Length: 139
Image (cartoon, rainbow, N blue to C red; front, side):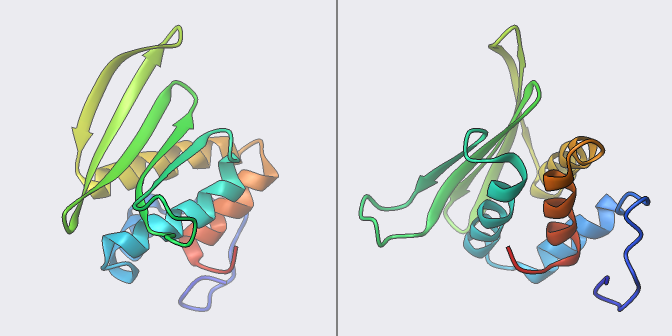
C-alpha cells in the first residue's frame, strides 16, 4: 500500500520525484536520512557494494558520517557536512574513476533510486528494497 492507502502495482515503476520528496519530507534530519538509507540499501545492494563510515570509532556509536553505494559504473556518495549533506556521483570506466560531480541532495536521491529501479527490473531483492524506500516499511 502507498502512504495514501492505494495498492502498489509491482509492474508500474515508482514515481521517483514523489519518492525523493517523500524521503526528504519524512527525514528532515540528514543524520536520520543517512541511517535510514543505510538500513534500506544494505538489503538492496548488499554489504559488498555499500560502504558506511561511522562518526565514532566505538562500536556503540551508530551514527553514519558517510555512505557510498556502487551501482554499475557509478559511485553515489553522501557525507555529512555540518547539518547538511554533501553529495557526489562518481563515474568509472575500466575500474578507474574518470569523473566525480557534486550534486544537490534531491538530484543524488533521484539518480540513486533510478539506478536501484533499473536493477529492480531483474532483481527481486532490489525491487523489494526499492518498494520499502519509496513507500516505507520495515527492513
